[in-house]
Length: 285
Image (cartoon, rainbow, N blue to C red; front, top):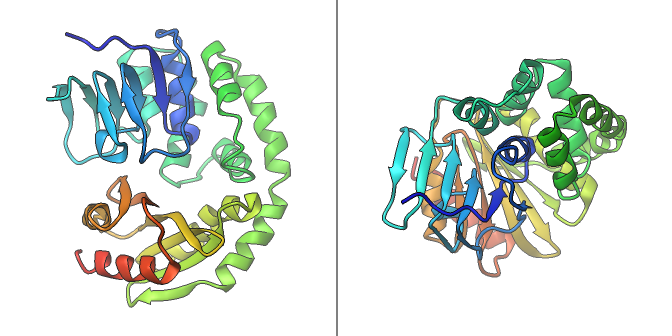
């Protein structure tokens, strides 16, 4: 029996939001873009890039994702129906193809570029920088609604305005890079204040710069003296999934693609504790 879908719950980046907008063309239900996943209990939802290992409970839902090593179709023991296709560069492209939805090639390519951190078109650069200005404040409902209605021109104009604000983020990126440090011989990290919108926005760009010279790059978001969470990424031929697994057993919610993923602290963690956990996790590779 297929799940009864009462809402769409999606990852809040460009790919997840665009995917939610596309899917809402055929499933007319409320959209949710949770910023915190670890304590979520989800049932009877279409979940975009949100899988059981990232939340407290997920059942009787439709799971759509492109992160993984093997395709997956059909039901699991919790009544979830899976559509997992790792060959796709973006979940929005998977959704458009699976349900045969109109998705302009320029936008498809741009979102794929952003999701894989390959900014090889003008539009991908514009939407990446528009998002990085304030990732937490990204108007997800508004963007999804424009995608649902196919208002691509209006969406482009909104992105251009965000792009123009990006100079402040570039200044913060330089500051973050200046305080980056070695964690292990093959990894480097920096911290940023999660509640500072400009530092939050700059963290991804700083990571991209460090990835050009360092095999593994980690950003650690802080709330005062407490670790909020972070991102781990590599551009080398490495598989980071063992890191996520180790962190899940060490007081974190963690998951992602083999080359990029994240973690959230489930309990109070100091920076020193998290750095020790990350060192131990990297040894699992």
